[in-house]
Image 1 (spheres, each protein chain N blue to C red):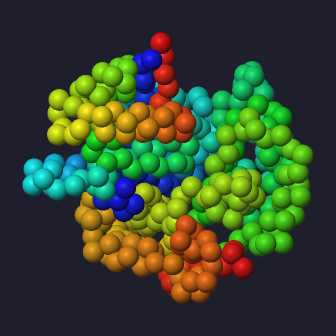
Image 2: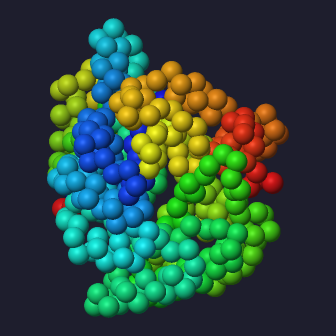
Image 3: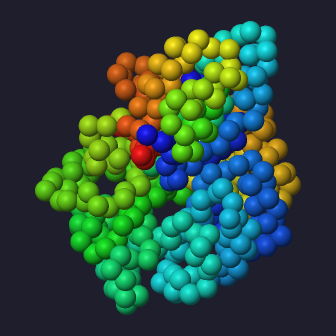
Amino acid sequence: MRAFRNPDVLWREEDESKAQAYEELEKGEDVEAIGTSVLFSDGVMLSLNLIATEIWKLCDGRDVNEIIADLTGRFEVDPDVLSKDATTFLSELKQKGFIYYED
Amino acid sequence: MNLRELTWPLRMYWDLSGTFPDPGLCLKICSELVEIKILFLYLRVGSPAANGCCNDILGRLKGGNTRVSVTVSDLAILSSVLGQVDRTSLKLLLAEASSLHDVWSLIELAGREGKEESPFGISFEITQENFHEVPDVVSYCAENGIRDLVFPIQRLETGKSVFCVSRTDREEISRGLEGLDYSKLRLTIHDPFLWKIFFPDADYHEGGCQAANSMIYISPLYKVWPCPAMPVELGDLYETCLKDIILSEGKKRLRSVLLNSPGECAACDSSEKCLGGCRGRAYAMTGSLTVSDPACR
């Protein structure tokens, strides 16, 4: 199943927050709580952290395994934890109508 | 995640003036709007003389990431916009109505356009005179191919009378809505208490006052306000650029005030999510930013 961003969702990366998150990451700090992008649809605003933003950006027709493989190569995270978190996050996005799947 | 407070707003409300059209300034504002990545621009065209600026803005933003909606104030402007504006850069066109009769007229005009679905939506500002018409407006729009119905943010001014839908009024509207099917209507409701009538089981999605955070407003005189309903001047675009106004200490101070619920809300279970309701309305009615929305009472 390939994941696609819903084109009705408007979104942007927050440059200052993103720079801050990468800076903290370099220092080995936890960046989970730093929002680096906002998604907006039908009055609902979502704030995503660095990893979630990267997952969102990869929803361009890739399947879940391809998304996870891409992130594992770029971030120092346990693949099993990442796989579980990414799957849960994608389910939430699907439930909110922010992404859709196609075969 | 901690992106509750944004550096740059997501939504900009901009009322264009026919009396003071300034194409040069409008395009300068547009450039900044693109730079700070505004996602939604809500233009309001109050007179035919402002149409030129509206077209310039739409042309400048065409093909970009900013989604634009235009609200026009009367039939003459609507006809003009329908005929002239490059619609490809326009996400939504709304016509203002202040009575059920206005809605009828607009729907008749939409019918003459010969489309099954109206090429424009309705923006219905609720006042003391028309609040009891809300259920009929909803019903009539739903039955006549209107897809978008907006109850817009009030443009409030300090010292002028402010209408808010009281608890009793809301109960009347609620009774009128019983049994109506408006599921196909795309409703936009900015008043948190009015919103609750239509969506009683859901939390108000804004999560507290968004003035000067996710939203910003440019008045017809090019003054920047936190929100159309909050008449607090953050800056003048003739003197200061938009980015500097948004990054100003005055704006930061205002946000720090709005992030705290008014003291009188302390005992309320909803205060964490509501943060005092529409703080602009409270300010316009009382002159204080630290009191709760009078519509709550």
